[in-house]
Image 1 (cartoon, helix red, strand yellow):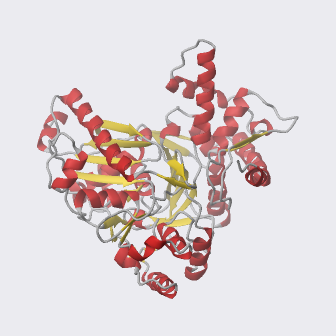
Image 2 (image 1 turned 45 degrees about the vertical axis):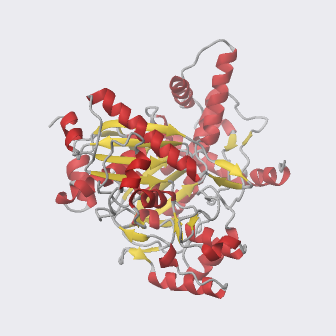
Image 3 (image 1 turned 90 degrees about the vertical axis):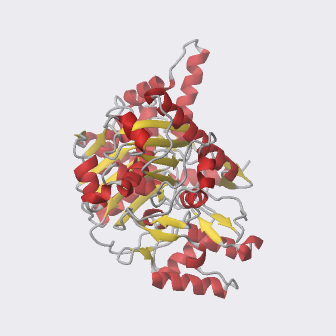
Length: 531
């Protein structure tokens, strides 16, 4: 059956992911082949010290993204989609969206980027003996309690962005287990919030004077393949302004960008890993067993099926890198040269490979916000060098590429060197891998392991959530999620593995020593630059 007929009959799966700077939609057949795509650009805002998005912009972005995808379908196939086999939504993990019993928003949406929860995260980590990162929803909720915010007494629901959008589209207060693992610790055997920890959290909240129970306000946990409800008439109208899209379409559990990244790279089985490089950058390794001890630098989350997974998550990835490339584009315009943005990125990234393996002694931090791995609660983008450093364009671009992995590298060192975690393969994905070879070589040097990038790498999480929707619609006949991915989606997909260059590995280790030592400079910049 051709793509046009599949679309007409609704034998397709739609995935929409709300990323930090782009909302992307991908339409696939049940084997994961991309049939159409669409997108919408947006950006978070720093308002009164809080990184946030207006929820009205979330709705508008969804409509814009779907409209873009619908037009792509119409241009390619001459038909307008009316239904799909399944739909999935995903988004940036963590954060805090609080609603009252009438679904009225009670407080600004706090994204993963906020690091204003140190007291709560420390208290919960000590209480639960489990690392609770600053950006987790439980930390945000308890910090609001500690701060005595008036709205807490009216909280009826707390969502991540993905769970919130799923709720608006289906009326179902549910969440995929991978996204739930960014709200509160998960018991991978029970496939639910850890019951003992839940009771401790509830007791702590009650002691603070609030009659609020975690399971009452957090969404219900589901795993890949579970029925997560159907698109309502209101949800269809919200998504498609033309009124063409029909309600009743099954929807898979909403997932976070970590879970969709694992799915998009076939990294859902123990021993597999992936690195997603974007506005935030994170690496994940699926574990055979729990880590030997608590590490504040490491998040313990799960795959969409519930396997335990260790994550090294950096709040800051490519924002500063993009700013520098835009500056070079501005310079090109000043010189009368019209530079294509894609070509500019490609040429600068490729040129970075001609630089010194240790970046010539240059140092940079792309800290637009705080960084949990290095225990820094605010950010100041920073570039520094020694008088004798080799300051040239290749080294400058190389250090900015290195530093996009700087914090993640520290977390991966804990896993691979200290914990001895076995890594069978690691896959790279996200926009940073669009330029061939460059980030493959740099990531291979950072983790001292071969890195594979497939042709689907730039599709990222939107493709991953589309695959989870396809698994619900048709993939369960293959067995578990990992079986569906192995036997159906990735069976014909190939990617070239790049082995680490010993000189690059040594150079990245030197850069890492500089990176750790220079954190005092970053802290001094935060203390001094407060205007």
